[in-house]
Image (tube, rainbow, N blue to C red; front, side):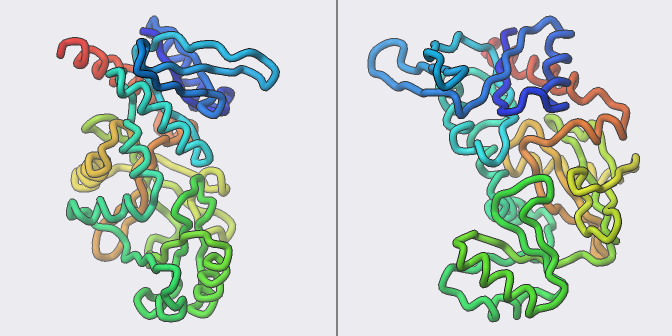
Length: 303
């Protein structure tokens, strides 16, 4: 197959691993930045075209046809990346996570609503309108409180407010800056640990426990967190798979947290990193992603 990965940073570990796995499987892969694309719609054939500009002073060229697409763009490229995905989806090119699913996962509040609608347990969460008085918001969530911007990754945009007044001050500041934010209960008994489950299709293919370090409450790799192998219960595996399905994703990194009342879903990532979980689990996740994409392509070809 001729594959396209949409990614702004081709040198990242995840991108290089996926390219290596694709080429070792006999496929060709291009890695292109969706922000360098120009999309064209026309009533004349071809109806859908994509032009690509490698540099600001170079002439654009028409992209060739691709058999399948792997989206790996960050939150700053979500809108354009999903527009490019829709261009390919309209031509029945399989994508490893659709534009609709990608957008649902990237909006933290919408994803929580979709999870709750499917009966999947999440921490108690609040989203207040711009005219809702910030101090009143804190009547409905206990302290300490987690505050999260609606977009963000790698732990960025996640704040722990130890006291109610601190939470109010942060909410008011973010409101003034017109940054939407949700408030969420802090699961103190987790002791700074969470679980990352890597789901492909209907199976958890790898998992790890992440632990925060040096007083940092976030367990993310990019925030200095460490990781170790972990055994998930069948119930936890089922929660991760159901969360992936609830958002319509093929591939997902599902973050779980063990609370006193049971395991909760913290977040679902549509473009989960491979480095920490591959090195911790020893599992070739990149190859399994390529195999899943091959199956999706064959299923489409067979009608």
